[in-house]
Amino acid sequence: MRIIHLAKAMLIAASATLVTIPATTYANSSAIHSRMATAQPIWAKHGMVASQETLASQIGVDILKQGGNAVDAAVAVGYALAVTLPRAGNVGGGGFMMVYLADKDKTIAIDYREMAPSKAHKDMFLNENGDAVSNLSRFHGLAVGVPGTVMGLNQALNKYGTMSLKQVINPAVKLAKGGIKVTPDLAVSLNGLKKRLMKWPSTAEIFFKPDGSSYKIGEVIKQPELAHTLSLIAKNGIDGFYKGETARKITKAIQQAGGVMTQADFANYKAVERKPVSGTYRGYKVVSMPPPSSGGVHIIEILNILENFPLDVYGHNTAQTIHFMAEAMKYAYADRSKHLGDPDFYDIPVKHLTDKNYAKAIAKKIPFNKATPSAEILPASFAPYESNQTTHFSVVDKWGNAVSNTYTLNFSYGSGLVAKGTGVFLNNEMDDFSVKPGVPNGYGLIGGEANSVQPGKRPLSSMSPTIVFKDGHPVLVTGTPGGSRIITTTLQIILNVIDFKLNIAEATNAPRVHHQWFPDELRVERSLNLDTILLLKKMGYKVKVKSAMGSTQSIEITEKGLFGASDLRKSDGAAIGY
Ligand code: GLY
Image (cartoon, rainbow, N blue to C red; front, side):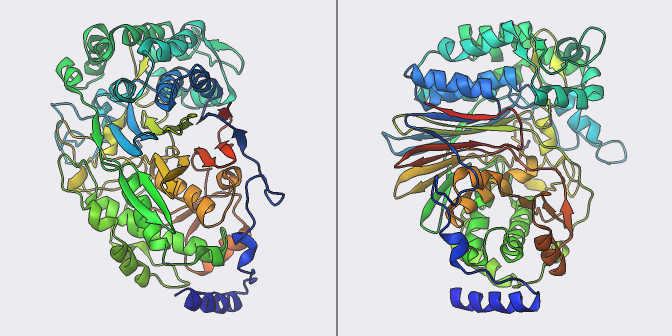
């Protein structure tokens, strides 16, 4: 197989005037802190946190230094980001946490995805003509799913942490009360969404000045109501959020905004421990989030397809490599649209989709040097919409435990609504359901029955917190925000490390590409080489240069210590260790 592909690589190189690169150039050029490296990761001996906001990373490292384990630190980071990165860090949203317990050699997947309220129904986002009304699923009381974050974080702490809730929440309470300095990222994101956010007086009074003007970089935003909400959680645990004052205030705000959520929906919320989805790739084991996230299933499906091609021979980010990646992505996203949803409501064919033979059959269908039109994989047509929020953090402690956590409000600042008196931004996760078969969600993704709205159901996600193992040991903890691009961005970190032997900083900085079947376009970052783009166009790709994708937060675990990289695509993140 490899020889045939090599021969084909020479042929295509000749016919497309490609420069033939010796197979070894990329394969061997990568050791950590080698002189070949074009970027260096952060190093630490004992423990490390990589997150999208520096104060939160530092809080996590402080917890590790105080003797806390990776779960204690992760929960502290999760609460801290709710204060310091209000557009994605949250207590009013939901997410997924992968926990690797070194002493048990076991990985646990905690699903704390939001749930549809009990009065939700299939047609709740359609008008009288049966057309989908995106405002209802995105910027309205109906857009809000029952938040899962507090349940998920607290459950993780109770079962796998060692510290008290007070110890891990207090740093966040202090920051909310004392105020945070407005970072460039916070200033730009608030100002950019001003119109959407100012619509809600309860949001405007916290995140904009009394005269309606925007906060500037370096000024201070205080969140006393959020401090109070966090204190109630610290004092009363999950009841401090899911019952009493906070539940009452949040459900009232949602109902006043046209929603149907009740206090009973809050009281009934449950986080679920699920069996992680796992696969192998070139001798590594990849463990990731199972449904209701599509992330793990499709990362493994794409890796299984790509295992049939010698990507290291074709080279990093060459047109040939990107072609195989894009084709594999198309098949995976086509499957996603049909087969993925909440496993408590729908039978998801995980085994089939992650089967090596299934992948081999797809690999055989992929032409060597020609893009397959998406309509030939499965017909559909619709228009995309852009959005990019969610956030990820990775933690490793001195005992070798690891946490990979991705959580979200869905859009930047979610629905935009802060529940009055709580300081809590509410998610708009209901838009991740398929509001009508064939109608795309906020990320241009389509779905069908498996992801239709039903009471108590969890909307399909792309979030992909992932841990990669070699010889039974975790070697890479990673994940990213980015909506539908989460799967492909996480995938590229794995490929960059395994196939192209890039260190984690290089793997993070490398230009990214994305194909999601529909729209039938290959999205690339502007740093991708123009020659490569031209070759891809010759193969038939509609290449679109668009904004940067993802904000990966990764830690590599090696014999030489921990190596971390916080994505420079977002300005405020940091990998910090000790
Ligand atoms: N809200 C984005 C996702 O869950 O994939």
